[in-house]
Image (cartoon, rainbow over all chains, first blue to last red; front, side, top):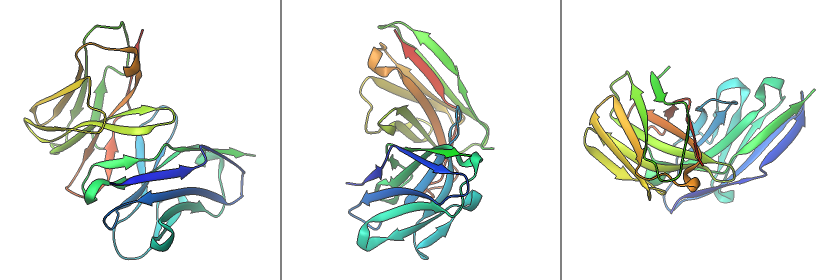
Length: 113
Length: 113
């Protein structure tokens, strides 16, 4: 069965600092992995996804994530945080590579000036 | 904009009453999903649909039923609401099979007293 674990329910960084949000997955098949972002009072929107091919994937707003099979990880990074990055971030894995997604519990990112 | 509208956006009801949430899409997509979002649990799949009258259960389907008599509408019903069903409910669609990219509505906040 597939699952994801997000380490840290809250992460705080200063504006301009590196953002690192951690996600580890479990999957019995080669996984499809996703990061979604949720701004206050909104639905989720896709940041980036990994299906096959290049293990470093780039998404919107300067975010990127690297698929590391040996570590079963898919951590999300951004070199320099901006105030507008404050949101909740969800890692997800697809169930048997279908459109049914299993979401992590989320990490709330706070950015301080 | 995937043209997803959820109604009602906010509802307060009492234990034991029936509640129906509606998801309406304007783009004629086949695949639709209902998720609930709770603190500490992330998003969990309730039910999904691959077409008219083609629905199936997700991981937390107990106490919920769905119907899809038209492509554009996916209804979620709580036959007898309980306090444990207080949550934010999100409808989502995908534009193609196995893309993993979900487009979410803005959510329906349900409070069961």
